[in-house]
Structures are given as C-alpha cells and as structure tokens.
Image (cartoon, rainbow, N blue to C red; front, side, top):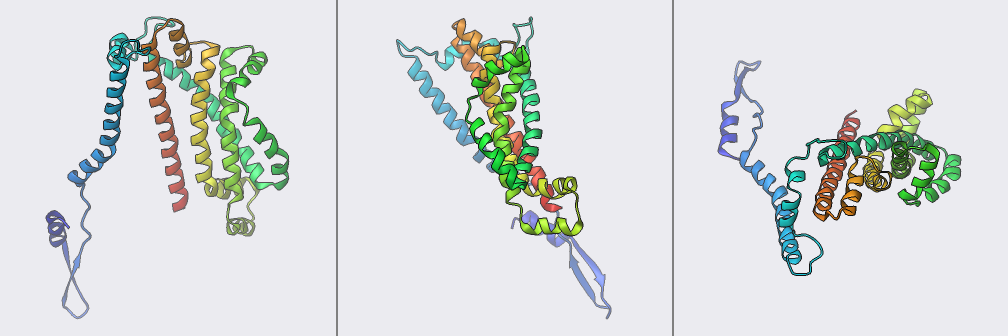
Length: 298
C-alpha cells in the first residue's frame, strides 16, 4: 500500500457514539485514485511491443527493397511517392481525385448497409435454427453449403439481378457475412440452460418476450462472436467487390492504382484497409463486452 493510500485511510475516519456511550471509530472507504505511474507502465506494455515489431519490420522492408533489382518500393519511396495520400487523407479535387479517407468512408457506407442487414437476418435465422430441431435439420445443411461459396462468385449473379453495381456490392457483403452470424447464434441458442427455459414457461412468456428477454441475452457472447467474424468478412468482401464494380471505394482505388503502376499508393491503401478492419473488429468487440456485461448484471 502506498503512503498516499495509507494517509487517505487514516484521515477518513468518522466518529459515531454507541449505545453505552463509548465512541466507536468508523473508517470510511478510501476513494480510489488514479495511479499515474501504473497507468503509464500499462500503456507502455501495450504500445511498445507492437511499435518495436513495426519498426523492425520496416527496417527489414527498407533493407530488402533497397537492393538493386527489387520489384517493390521501400518505405522511404512510399513516403515520397504517396506523400499527399498519407498526410492529407481528406482532400477532394473531383469525383475520382479524392483522399483515401473519403474512399474508406464510401466503402464503410456499403459495409454498414450489407452487414447491418446480415446482422438482423442472421440473428433471427440463427434463433430459429437453434430453437427448432426441424428448422435445424432443414436449413443447416443448406447454410453449410452456401457459406463455402467465395464472395466474388456471388457478384455476377448479383449484377444480373440488380443491374447496378452499388446494390450488387451490398448483396455480396450481406451474403458473405451472414453465415457466421447464423451459425454462432444457433449454437448460442442451443446452449441456453434449461433453467432459463423453465423460468420462461413459469412466467408464461410469449415467443417475442422469450426472444428478447431470455434468448438474446443468454446467447449474446455467441452472437457477438459471429458478428466479429462477420464484420471482418464483410470488409474483405467489399474491397474485392469494388475492384470489379468500380466507383470511388477503396477497392476500386487499388485496382486503378495497379493499372497505373502506382505501387506506393497500393501499399498506403492496404495500410488504410488494415487499420480500418482492426478498428471495426474492436468496435464490435467493445459493443459485445458492453452488452454482455449489462445482461450479466440484469
């Protein structure tokens, strides 16, 4: 215990008289204080290892690609060639001459629509499959077959159906990301304890009340595991789909940069894609921890 904590405990003492007149000292609980040193050490433990590994990888990349005959640009050349894309991601000089941040936001808009639909439909279908043995026998084999179809294999069919690139890309995201949501939700529903189901019978909950008050909270960890996998697959699918459908998304930018032999721009775009995917995964994980913590308290 630090000197500050001991001082706080000794100073925070209340006096209360007892029945026989004697004085009883009641120690109040010391108010927790933020330990700056401990917080700094925790931050250093979490940031220094990946930072050091990144610097080592950049050094290896620089040494390898600086040799004569190297086919890829080193980091120093990437910085020189793509300086504008790196330092100003929000510039806008026309329909196609825009920064990578705007392209990522355009792709994220499509991901939000496709993944949002997949989350809603996937949780509902997963609940049905997990709750009904007949639904599981009838639908699970179909789901297992369809989930193995590569994302881009759906693109020609979606283009023929929608006759437009934007809804086709959204459909590809939807059909790619829905399967882990369905499967994980079904597993979570099947693993709901029998005590919860018995309580629902005692309370005479209707199917909607059982779904909202019992099923979703109990299966929340499984559901959000499926959502984390689904959001990663949706981000992969949109980049691949945009390479073929065009537009202003990050995927089409990579394809256009390849056709123009701008390898440095491709590398910068890949960094944007990786960071965005990492942030999406952490956001879904954070939302899942908040929801599961709230359901556990209730």
